[in-house]
Image (cartoon, rainbow over all chains, first blue to last red; front, side, top):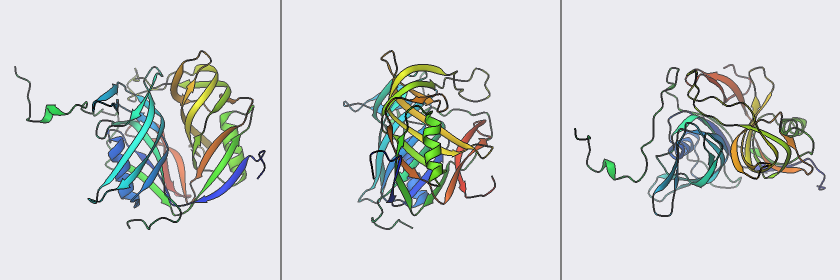
Length: 134
Length: 189
């Protein structure tokens, strides 16, 4: 297609969309969404929403806490992989904005990022990849 | 008085999550989801001079896409407006969006926008993004798509079409605000 094209189309594989409710943990919420929709592996995309407080991991094994409510998720990308022990593990990285609009970034710490109002998220997987778990 | 302590519980270096009380009745279903076996990836060029809303909605409607998850890959806006979400002083909800804050001629670093339908069946765009304001500050928040205007160059967007189900804005009794949720195509709420 020419550079001037406004839309260019292509195929992709399986997709799921969810709204996750307040007080659920961001990371485990995404993992449970994979269970609900039968994804063993997924790219996590198109995510936006808010957190009560955000907790982003730091190099010393601690975290940077950003106090809300609400802390807006303004960028998020990551993946979910199935482990050899049979568990699912989401790794999500992103940028958040505090109630004054100031931004912070890093990896989201599992168990410490409760959703405030809503979290909208899209999972995708490769078109020719393995069949889902159900 | 001694603080109650359960062995090992204080050892976590991470803050304990706060469970907020919302005004409405707790809904036991916490994950509202739908899936589709096949979707489309689309590269969309947001056209200069249009509002973010128009630039997203019209070309996608032209190829039959009414529900989508999109990633805005970065570019200049001639004008950008956003809101942040501090606690709601009225107590009607846990938080309330502020009045629109002008960011001026801003560079959107990265954004995600969801395309669905509002309560009247019309297109709705929900966008959060990080951006650099005209004043040089890097900020983030809820973007107002109707009043944010694409700058002089097109802005590339990766669109994932959501085929086989719908995203509709419906009133959520628990949080007491309208929210986008997935539904069967054409199904009632």
